[in-house]
Amino acid sequence: MSGGAAEAPATAGSGSRADAPEPGSAVSRARRGVTLAGSITGAVIVALDGTLLTVAQPTLQRDLDATFAQVQWTSTGYLIAVASLLVLAGRLGDRYGHRRIFAVGTLGFAAASAGIALAPGIGWVVALRVAQGVFGALLQPATLGMLRAVYPPDRLGMPLALRTSAIGLAAAAGPLVGGVLVAHFGWRAVFLLTVVPALAIAVPALLYRENPEPSPAAPLPLDLPGAGMLAAALACFVHALVALPDGGSRGGSVLGLVAAAALGAAFVRRERRTASPLVPPRVLAPAAVRGALGALVAASAALFGALFVCTYFLQDVLGLDPLATGLTVLPLAVMMVLAAPLAALLARRWGPRRTTVGAALLLALGVLLLARLDPDSGRVAVAGASLLVGAGFGAVMVTATTVVVRHASVADAGVAGGLQQTAMNVGPVLGVALATTLLARGAFAEATGPALTALAAVAAVGVLLAARLPRK
Image (cartoon, rainbow, N blue to C red; front, side, top):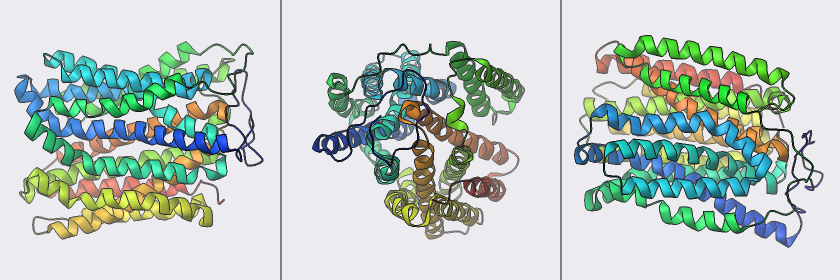
């Protein structure tokens, strides 16, 4: 691998690739720009799709005469598919090239989106959402793997910050754009919105030939049994968390969690014994990587759990309509956009540990302020606390993701990206499940405070995990 003295020591096994050109060359600068644009666009497409679906679901349910449970599976099916396949998808990128896997994932995601827009019934929508999850799993780790391949570790912070800012912008714009599309063109229009940009970035990536090509040396075989164990464990875990708030399904949720634990233990046992592990031990060996992944899970759980509670609080307790609700929490997304590049600069000056610890503290404080809401609270109080939550989460996401990606060699960048994306998909499910379970224990207005306090405690756990990140 050519990447200059700034590259992290590579301990890649056979089949590793050296696909970064010399950092100082004009080709390298052009390639970095194209790669950054593709990575940002791919991440935005996935983020935008999720927010658009949320807006479109009520109209979709009425138009297709679907039950609430069927509509819920448009989200649950996607979550299970994407979360269970992210690590395998990352390894496929390490083996066959991140641009190639990125192109396949993006084209498949676009095709599934177009198919949903033409779907004749709810069964087709659910099936195509599962397909979207499969292709989304291919797409997401590749957006990080491509960046790791063309940027030295000490220059990854700002590209990842720009990527995070774009995701925050998509989260802010999604409900507004989705509302306009649904109101004027119907729910099918929201699924067509991402097709053109997906094709625009997928076709060049598919035609582009990586240089140099993957090593001709025969790589070790993929650990397909291990991949199956991990996929099944994550699928059981996510499904159990999604079903946990439903009182009638808690027995099944407990069995799902037990199955996930058993499959996870079997996966770890296999990884320690096989010659070609799906997750090489060197990827998770640094304590900083494990701490960063844990901080991402805690921060995303706290954010999405708090956002879930606040959305219902604003509508059911304060009586706001969906548009007013979205505008009230808009400062969260705005601060996420602004905090991301600032976090990259602070991390270079203060180091990842102090930056992430400070950001996680901001997040915990913001959620704790939200926990003090009551029926007499105004929108200004919610918006003010949302500023802290957005700033804290944006900074944690940038600095923790940078630690995960920069500690991996180019040959393991896909697996590292898959682990980061798994953390970012599991965390929100965990946070919403915790919030919903606590809210179900009493009257909503009285249960809001305890639920948000618990989520603030989750964010505080992220502070402790962030303390394991490196000083520099």
